Image (cartoon, rainbow, N blue to C red):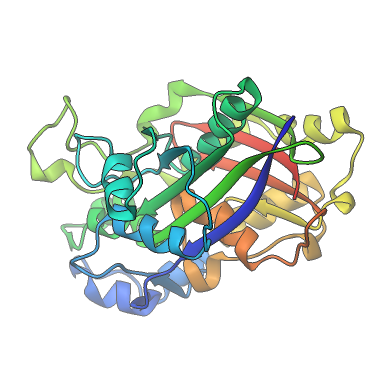
Length: 320
């Protein structure tokens, strides 16, 4: 028995902000015009309506799957959440009218990839046969718009790349094809490089900690310290090359780093789905978004390469 990805859908809010809009919205410190797009390659990002929650974006994405049968498990896998308690998966299930077991999985931008990993494990164990993994990302709620000086702008810069989005992936038991390789790694000593500190036990109520903050340079260095071996080892152990895949989906935070990683891994440009310029950093919804945009057909192989704060890396290879 294998676990096969049989459905992928995403939801992108209609409202968008250009990088110029972002720079104009910042109050206090005035950044150099054009710096956001120049540094990241991002032209547009999506912004949820004020009345939309993370659960709503997930529900919209699930609607795009056109499900005929209810899943027997729902996993909400996202960096965002409606509230600290209960698990946002309960809220999603209630809005969808589902009565199956539910729980949340959270691991920054690798949340969806880890959610699919858990779904596969539960299917292979025989515990479940149809698992719905969904995400609703609302990082726009954590962007700092009141900026005091250049240092605070730099500390807040990663937030200006983020985009709201929803994603849904259906994973089902299949006797013929499905996920055939997965591997994950982490360097948890680097957890403090990128954080959204508020809402937890460390900073339960201080609004100053309700904004995303991070150091892009140190984050890049942390990923380079882990190295690309996890991705290259996947090819070595399976005897495949990137040419054997219809789509190589890579988490994208900035075009310069995507180009650097693609060069290091020798990924052909035609295998990549470059989602970043028109959609921004969609956090955990990025890989499903690229599958939705990519040109694959049933039976094709796809590769999912994940990068997440904390920091963590993951690779999953699947026959669709």
